[in-house]
Each structure stands twice: as structure tokens, then as C-alpha cells.
Amino acid sequence: MELKTILITQARVGSTRLPGKILKEVNGKSLLEIHLERLKKCIKISEIIVATTINNPDKVIYDKALEWGYSAFRGSESNVLDRFYHAVKNSNADWIVRVTSDCPLLDPVLVDDIISFAHHKNYDYVSNSVLERFPDGQDVEVFKFSALKTAFQNATLKSDLEHVTPYIRNNANGKGANFFSSKNFDCEKDFSAIRMTVDEQRDFELIEYLIQKLGTDKTWLEYTNYIIENDLIKMNNQIVRNEGFLKSLKNNKNG
Image 1 (cartoon, one colour):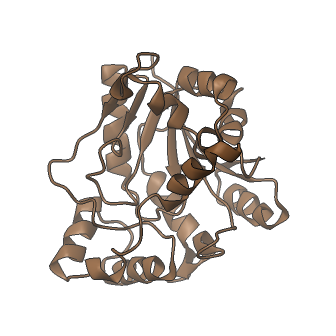
Image 2: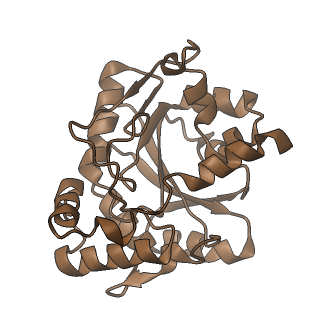
């Protein structure tokens, strides 16, 4: 029987470093639309849900997603775990894929490969970012709905609520626990110095340049090789990876 796999991309207008970043346009299309059009090519996905917040400025994201033919959900801004769970709790999903909408050039073939790996191995949680060797902006997490439900019912730390999957990762065999089974989806080479995500203006300028030169339909490796061959790494490699998550870890004591 075909496993029902739903991809959720989290999206909001608010951003401390680059407000409105996912609505910024390149060649007449917003980064959000480019992101979704690439993910629509995934063959292992049953449905794409754009999960945004109940804040008034984010209604535009909800409306745009529906206009473009995708499912959409509005939930808590700060408790993203709650938002994810309620977006899919009545969907009868077997598997959930988590991505973020500030990664406009996320590779649909890579997403499918990770989903296939998770399905075949039957791990509770699989990601290509447990060991960060893929470029930032190509991060994919695949996990069972049952693991999401357990996290929703048990997570209490601020970082667990804000970032959806830390509870699962921290209670998995990869962290010395055995509540969940987990596995990293490996990359042969280390491309972790490459940034294809959008957190700051420098990031946007790189994405804009890549799209203008290569279009929006290349593989993650083609974009990566172009960045390396044209010495574009220096445009944005000073930016800290996963800065938002590191900040929320520091705030756990305040939760």
C-alpha cells in the first residue's frame, strides 16, 4: 500500500534579519513561489501544506498558497510544533516531510531520495542535516507522523516547540537514546560551507544571481558547483548556520 507522505513547509513574513524575505521576487516570482514550484516536482509527496501563522501579515502567505493550488494552514507563530501537528492531525498521513520556505532552491529529487530512504529503512526520523555536509538550504527532515504526535504530546522545551524536531532527534538512537530510530542521509563530500538559504540580504543576492544565471530548475549539485567554480562562497559564508535554533537553545532556560 502506498504510504501517505505530506510535506509541510513553514512560512511567515516576519524575519528579524530580512523582513518579508520569502515574498522578495526574482524575475517576477517570489522566493516562496519558486520554492513551491520546485517541490511540486516531488513524486513521493501526496500533498504540500504551507504552514504559516495566525498573525495578520501572514494572511498573504495563506492566500497565495491557496491561489497557487496548494493546501495551507495557519497556526501558532512561536509553537511551530503545535502548528505542524494541527496542520496534519486529521490527514491520515504516515510520514511528514519538514522543510522551510527560506530555501527557494531546495532540490525535489533530493527530497524524494531522502523520503525513499526513510520508507525503505523504516526509521522514525531521517535527515540530511544530522551531519551537516549538504549546503545550507538543502536541509530535509522526514519522520513518521507517530513521532510527530509523540513530540507534540511530550515536548516542553522552547527549542523543541520552536523548531519541531529537536525532541525527536534528542530522543533517538543517534543521541544515545532509544525512543526513536534515526539515521543521517549522507553526502559524499562536505559542502556545508555553501549557503543556499535566505536569512540576510547577502543570501538573497546570491540566490538572485544563481537564478539569473542558471534558472530555477537545476539540481542542488549544479548550483553548488557553480558557486564553487565562480568563487561565490565569499558572498555569504560569514553567516552562522542555524542561528535561530542556536538562539532558542540559549532561551530554553527561560521557557
